[in-house]
Length: 349
Ligand code: DP6
Image (tube, rainbow, N blue to C red; front, top):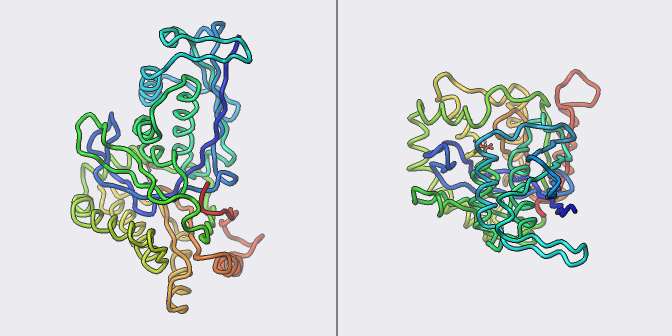
């Protein structure tokens, strides 16, 4: 027999960034962060997990290619979910798995991203969140989403925020064992559904410095990060929660852009400095800043993760259309530009 479960999880984009760990093994951050979960039609991972007594070892395929499962992060997630497994009864197929059997049974896992992994578009967040969610479903884990988020966190920090739709906060927590470092939903996907997300794929090359090693170097060398984590982010988190609650786009956009820029300033303050944005990213920032200024109130917020691709959040569909027109004007298709794709999506799941 084979028992299997399929789940789908969207990616999320941080508007107040997570950058820097206080514990690398448990993945505990130096500050809280807030994100927006994308619509699953656009950027998401679909994972099928299967268990069978005929499987002789755990195996996993990512986009059809087998990958190694020796990594500590994968093993931590698997161990944490397994330790919470319950009895499973699949009456339809006559399958019964007792709680104690999960220790001996092996898994086959197949995961697909509906976007190119190499494009540097936060694939680990959706991927690890989906893995933990589907394993928990397979093993009939009874814990709530927040507890599962603390497990997904151990796979990749940003993954803990992908277990909810809408607006999500990752609370950094204080406990040394990480049990209070988990995600909570601030507002659901219907709360602010005018927002439209546009992603400009500036480069589909894989990033040169991974988030994990980048943030390690920043923690070791940047004084600006210490100031950011202690003095800046706690205040920004409060303001961002307020902006989301009141659907105050002006404040939301100002905070989002400022936090993205400070994250990249912190990267520059790292020794040796880390450059994630390129000339095209900088041009996009100038175009958006100029437009927002000419309108009097911001129409679009921009944010960049550990790569040059721009994530832009437009106030509404009209602003999104005008933004696309502007981008097409400055970066016409088939011209000598490296801006090669726009993904248009609604905000949330
Ligand atoms: C810039 O979650 O990919 O996207 O925890 O080491 O797996 P690890 O890092 P990861 O870092 C994401 C960093 C970021 C900001 C954010 O998503 O908050």
